[in-house]
Image 1 (cartoon, helix red, strand yellow):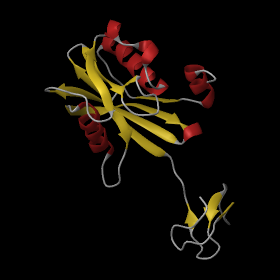
Image 2 (spheres, helix red, strand yellow; image 1 turned 90 degrees about the horizontal axis):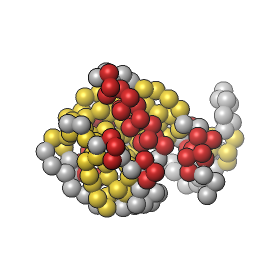
Image 3 (tube, rainbow, N blue to C red; image 1 turned 135 degrees about the horizontal axis):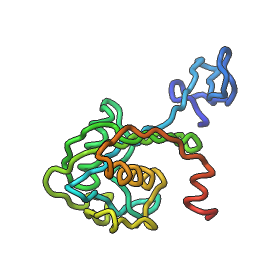
Image 4 (cartoon, rainbow, N blue to C red; image 1 turned 90 degrees about the vertical axis):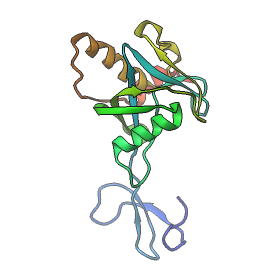
Length: 185
């Protein structure tokens, strides 16, 4: 950030009085520009014994498979965001049951909130997806999943499915975890 979005003057990066971390500060108007993590909301759409995955048509990780998810918009709830993203990416309607995985990615300032959901009706590739398909567990393209958050959510699901109990899973993905997933490239 170079300029204040409130008054247009240049900003500096420093710790405001009474704070404990650096922020962008405008000395002209006194505005403190807080930057907070972004929430990614999505669903794990289930149809019988199959899950719905989307092959990404956009960067990052174009061509890799993911669950339908994306950034939350202002003025919507997390459940609304998850359902909207599922409709946008997979042209699919879902019945959302509840939060299933909450995964913190502090190194990239994101929080993933994935909701367990039932697929209602059909599906098709939206503008951000190359294709959309239902997969049985043995058909999941594990080596072609876009993000570690997606792999973690799916692995929880298949372990929990054995017991028929789907508790909330809260975890972190660190920069080191991400590097192991993507490699050094």
